Image 1 (tube, helix red, strand yellow):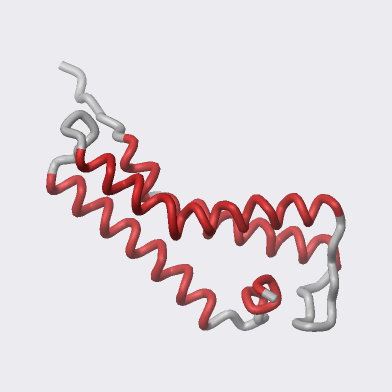
Image 2: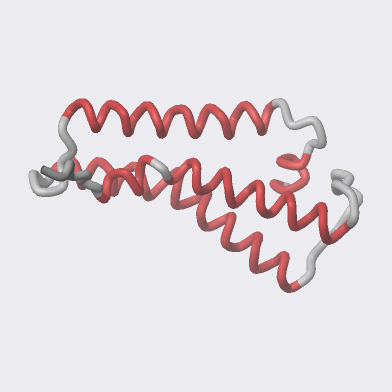
Length: 120
């Protein structure tokens, strides 16, 4: 008998902060490769067309992760077909909270002040 793994759409919602964090890391790598060094806050203005597109994707991901995904996630829990069992739901909450905790820890302890540069 093969074990079955049931992937639920609510896992996509639970992993959204991690996706945002990965996209933020790629935009930091984009800056590092484009400038040849990490940007200096309030001095460097790196606005190539590729970076603008990358920035737009990261911005949309952050907004969706913070605002839309929690609403969709709770809506999915409303319908029995998409509802995750309680242990799975609690794991999803733990994964989400850990993802946001890692993001905020990086934003607060950012040694290069890249997050503040990016948000300017």
